[in-house]
Length: 170
Length: 152
Ligand code: FES
Image 1 (tube, rainbow over the protein chains, first blue to last red):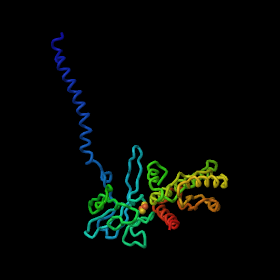
Image 2: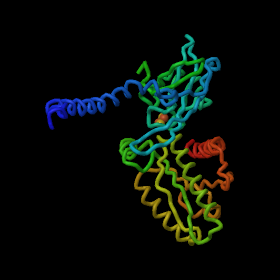
Image 3: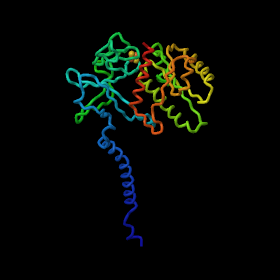
Image 4: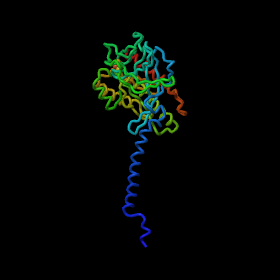
C-alpha cells in the first residue's frame, strides 16, 4: 500500500525544502541590494544632493546676486525645511561662482557691498568682516578663511547647487 | 547664537565678540477665549522673527530663552523679574539688550526696562495664516537695521 504513493523520498523532501528556504533567504538578501542599486535612478530630482535654485544660467551676471531656496533636512526623526542662500555671479573667466553667505568668523550673514565704505566686497555687519569678490577674506578683518563655496551643476540651462565645500583657495 | 550646547561652546570661545542679547517677550493666557488664537499667533510670529534675526546676526547676537508671562499680570512685577534676568545675564560682558515683542502693553513701560524694546505691531492676518515669508523677511531686515544703528 505504501510502495506507489511514496514518490518523494525523505532525502528529496529535505532537499526541496532546504532549497526553498535557501531561495527565500537569498531573495531576502538580494531584494534590498537590488533596490539600493536601482534606487538612485528612481529618486526624483530635487531629492538628490543638488537643488534647483530657480536661476537661469543666462541670468547670472558679473554682479553677485542672492539666491534662496529650501531643502528638507532630516535630523534623526525630525524633518524640517531649511532655508539656504548663496551669492552667485560669473567671474572674469565666465565661470559661475556660488559662495555661501555665512561669515567664517562667527557665522553672521554677509552681504555684497553691505558697507558703503567698502565697495566691491562682501561685508559682514557683525564685526566688519570683509571678503573680496572671489570670496577670499580681507587680511586684517576678523574672518580667517575665505567664504565656503557651493558645489554646482548646470542642467537645462538652470543652476543647481549642492553641498558647501571649503573655498578652493582656502 | 542660541542657548544650546553647541552654540554656548562657541560663545565661551568668543565672548568678546558676542555683545548683544535678544529676548522675546511673549504673553499667554487661557482665560480670554476670544484672544487666545490671536495671542498664540503672535507668539509664533515673535519666535519666527527672533530666529530670523539670530540667523542673520548669529555671530554677535545671543538669543536667550523667551520670557513668557500672563497677559493680565501686573507689569511692575514682570519688570522687576525681567531686570533680575538682565542683571544675571550681565555677568557676561553684554553691551546691548533688545526685547522683542508684539505686546503693545510694554511700550509705555519701556523706560523701566534695562535695555531697548523692539515692539512691532501685527501685520499678518492670523485668521488665514496669510503672512508671507517675504513680508516677514522684510520686517526682519528692518529690525536688523535698527539693531545695527545701536552697534555703530
Ligand atoms: S561674524 Fe562676520 S565678522 Fe564676525
